[in-house]
Image 1 (cartoon, one colour):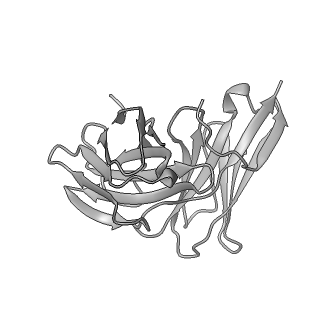
Image 2 (cartoon, rainbow over the protein chains, first blue to last red):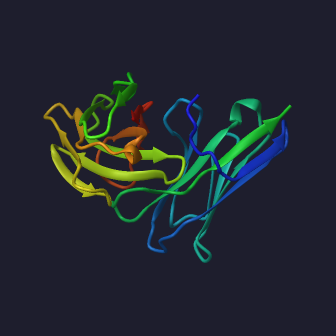
Length: 111
Length: 114
């Protein structure tokens, strides 16, 4: 498959454990955030989003937390599965300007 | 509902040549954004089109250009290719240009410049 990032930070977790992926965003004026998952050979896939008027949002097995004070976003994945192995990106948007993506984190799920 | 399609999927060019990449958005989507993805720089925004007009442009040289047609299909062109242009070029479509619209990505075009 195609190499998304040769030197990305990597998080290795045991199958069934919970995963927490962190992201520091750059613009304190950003008002909308998305987490994407990118598997080898594919484009990024939407996981969950959150607006700046919220600090937590839950989806199916995923939770996003937003801390505007320290400009920090996290993605929690419950009961991590082998299919969750991928590169995860956070993206921020400032009132309709273009999305700015973080560098990504590679999640490796160990059997 | 068909997803975002990009053609070609793979392309090999030599320095100095030019290349045109194509993106067909999801039916009904009017906004198309282009990104360059490299191992060193990650995902970087190139430009966004809505209703045939460029709305936003990233920090790339003028060799990178794009356009959008009346059916929302979009093309991007890179002229005078350089080795550093080797990358995965991703297209994303959304209903509109509002920041609150989810972007749907295509599989990308892998460009290799020799």
